[in-house]
Image 1 (spheres, helix red, strand yellow):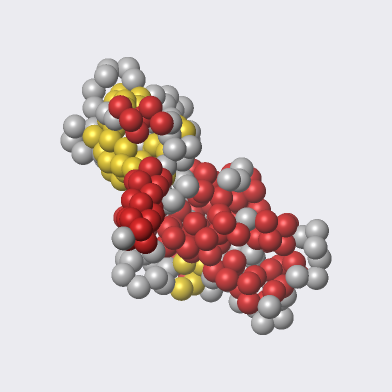
Image 2: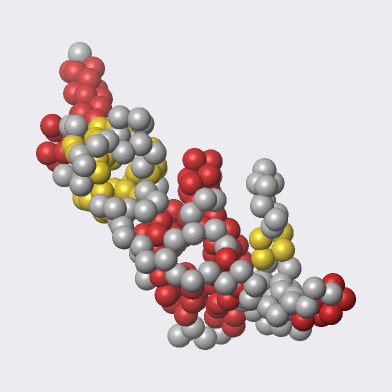
Length: 253
């Protein structure tokens, strides 16, 4: 009888602990200028890499723990980072406000190359990107650049193994947890769909806990061209960094 009682107490403690560790946070996102609810705002928990999207009432629900960081993003608005508190979970229905950004339109150059109108001549004047490309099944993109595939080239990932001070060695060696989060993002269809339409690198920068300039440097060290870095969407960048990390792990063995 005593053993059964102890087992019951033990199981109760486990159940209570699990309930305390994991909660669903309900909230609403509003425009800070008008107070109107905002639909289709993306909410990402940077700790467990789980996301949610606000409905037509600006409401969302997302799994959290105390001290997790939520990241709110919406095109044309300043992104917002908020630490989850015990009060948010206890009282629920938290309100979050996003501020609209003011953009200065830049001049758009439609023809970066001097074209004559004669195909034979123009084809020789337009530079060709020699990098190889690959495609991700299920996506309609034209393909992803796969770095310089010159057989005589030694990738910087390989060089990192022999130079402890190398940028990639320092990054990948110290950010294993962040790189595992990238793997989790690749397994989420919702997050992949979100990244496929984004070009600002904000989510990747937040998940990796890096500066934007460091993200670009990673890609250069992984042998990706400046054209790829500038023109690719966030999903392509995610795949490029993930591929480079997998190569790094194999060569490090």
